[in-house]
Image (cartoon, rainbow, N blue to C red; front, side, top):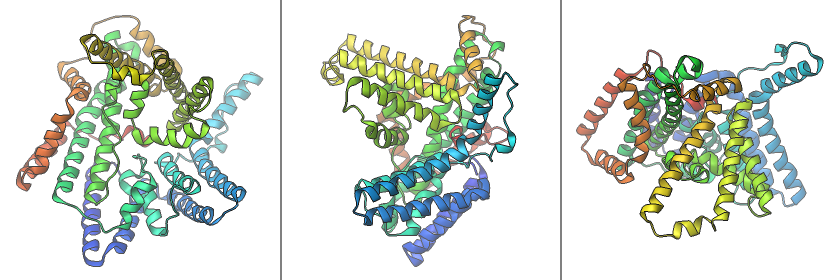
Length: 484
């Protein structure tokens, strides 16, 4: 059930009306049960066969966390923590990476024996459950927080099940921490006029990003370029790479806007997940702005436990690289994703080394802004953006050879561009330049919509709906991050 479809609008309308009606008439508990059933129904619409998986993994983590909290013996607590991490990563590894492992074993066997590559399809499993990477990380973080004594074990089994399965963030995030979401299910829900207006505004903006910008760039430029780069000039291929940078941002941040807006209309607030990432002045800044819920999860539950920056410089670079390699693998069972993670790990290490050589970022930030400083900052933003785009080539291309073909075609330096009509260039420009619209203008537009009377809000939303209808493709295009 895609967020950009009429079926989701109908589903959400039922969830909205039902949850608030139950909360008003019967109180909190019937609302919790109703939202849990709706969330499981939402997940079953993807593939009902995986409902037992999400239910079982949530139940096991809930029970193990309670057992860890009661246990005082350090060794026993650690054994139970290892058990829950092994179970969660075991589920994730089996469903998401089993096929990848089978294919690589077959390729290695063929390399050793000289026989043709052939994976044993009898050993292959079903397609991975949608959203498994997201709900696995959320549930695992709860047990880890309880183990660290940063969070008390939750008393309500049903509320915990809803925390994991809550449909706005179930299939593609954001990865919401238990300390942020569980308390919101404890208290009586509320929805002010301002929050309702903000939720509608976010959903409208998210749909515009997805349908008008992301989908059009994907269908009319990006997919064509990455499928057959040899059929396009260097300028067109470069536009395709820029187009993918814009597409994946508009697609994923658009999804996040819809998710945050949907949750807000149900009385739940999610954290911010994007902050104009292509304005970043270096890769460390990029990861403070891109998919914030994942980058902070990797920092808190992987990078810091590995040692973070508490050891030697060499150990810090090692920890950065391990974190980003695993972050790349988290995105999918492909060596392309691993290499994408390697490029970001390498870039983060170089960024850290450069900052230390200059005396640290704090010293640079304390310098007075000058014309020369502004020029340097602009150059850093431009360089960071192009490095991110270079890495996106390996993220988007299905194989290394296809990625190499894209880069080789850019190297031809040809400039004819019959496949770049002005409308497409305008869409690409709008998607990228929207990053550089001052934050105060966005906040002013959001505030104006929230303050507008309901009839005017309705009229504006109707115009958005007309625009979406005109821009929409024949079939709804899935969100990019649904594959992860």
